[in-house]
Amino acid sequence: MKLKYALMSPWMLAAAMLLPLMARAQKKQPKPNVIFIYADDVGYGDLSSYGATKISTPNIDRLGKEGIRFTNAHASSATCTPSRFALMTGKYPWRQKGTGVLPGDASLIIPTNQLTLPAIFQNAGYKTGSVGKWHLGLGDTNKQINWNKPISKGPNEVGFDYAFFFPATSDRVPTVFIENHEVQGLDPADPIEVDYSGKIGKEPTGLENPDLLKLPASPNHGHNNTIVNGIGRIGWMTGGKQARWTDEEIAHVFLSKAEQFIEDNHKNPFFLYFSLNDIHVPRMPSMQFKGKSKMGLRGDVILQMDWTVGEILKKLDELKIADNTLVIFSSDNGPVLDDGYADRAVELAKGHSAAGPLRGGKYSAFEGGTRVPWLARWPRGIKPGIVSDALICQIDMMASFAHFLNQKTGSEEAVDSFNVMEAILGKSLTGRSWLIKQGGALSITQGNWKYIEPREGKAVAELTNIETGANPKPQLYDLSKDIGEKNNLAEKYPAKAKAMAAELEKVRTAGRSH
Ligand code: NG6
Ligand code: CA
Image (cartoon, rainbow, N blue to C red; front, side):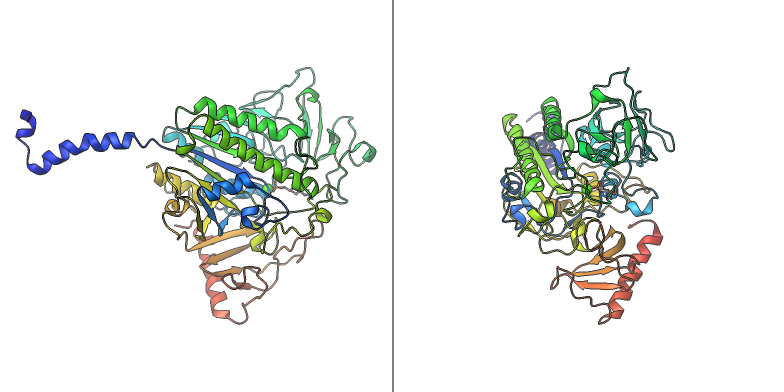
């Protein structure tokens, strides 16, 4: 025995000998890579693992088979921008003005001085990347974006080391890709200008030149401004001809950038936010998938999305990092069939329920608006084949990963995010006890009960034909018996409805959940 050990008590001795062993064991457990694949507008019933029979999504389903599939996971909101805001900040979007669906020329809505989900990973030594749809605004507040110069603020300023993205949605101008701060492929002699208040430049619009459209707009939705690639967009743009994307290539372009990021960073822990354009409108699959489903373009882009996930899994195998990579797949809001283009999604969906057994869809306060697929695989950390009905929300990613990576959040940060890491990894089948969701009206879920606050408005949205959940009377549902929210029990159980309304009010006025 060495001299230094001779002077120790038996306990100290044991500790001194064990510590290096423990350190070595810890070394053997490097931090997992995390890939969050965020699909757009994918409904609770759109995947075969969630009951779809008219379409097959084997690659996404595989995540659940080899890991965990959630039946009660949620986006914070029934549209894109607010759900993404919640994911990135851990704060309910309805606490901050201007977090609704953003135009393509909006300013960045995430404060740059606050901790974000990617910044937590950065602080824990990860390389962070954002590839795909952004839709959280760019540049300084109230300042017009100059698309022809480096853009001052965006993903890089809120925690991403690398970003390749488009600004808003594929139905909104400008229809260009941005890498970090710069529009890609821009010819300085053909500068980009964007306007959302009126026509700019001389290019044809869907309204004036419907004969030029390869994908006609649905009447009254307003996707009839500047035509790019034969598709009328929301908003007007001029210039930047060389930089404009071809819709049929978007999925492949994003995938190749995601793969490159993984490859470049596979030797150190990385966090990749992979935010797909699929299956948002305009649904323009590549030739590889066009006509491959029996459900028209919407079905084709579901297949394309599933293929994309399969390619990511292949890449992880190829790099031999699958074992220690946590891959999560989820969606930013519920499904919509007619969202602006005459792609025959409604008539071709026959027999396919995009929201599964749920009522409503995108934009709705009913479950169809926010209850979304969530599957996750991490061979080293999640047992295969778990189906969990734990209540979790994307807003919880922040507190969960902060805890997991031993990172602190300040008192003004992640104020609505709960640590549900045990549930995310399937170590516990219990998640949160309550959650507030937004789909026009706010609702609060507590255990099996869901209360939707009264709200004036059309019961069915005219354009999308989706039940909004708006009702001037309070609504109360027992989700354990009535997942389709058909039976309003507010009058039968007025005390319950009142208590839940009070709880919702308490959280709203407190400005925080904890
Ligand atoms: C809506 C658009 C819809 C879609 C949505 C955003 C109209 C009538 N409809 O305002 O087509 O672009 O915004 O979708 O303009 S989301 O998934 O990004 O929230
Ligand atoms: Ca969306």
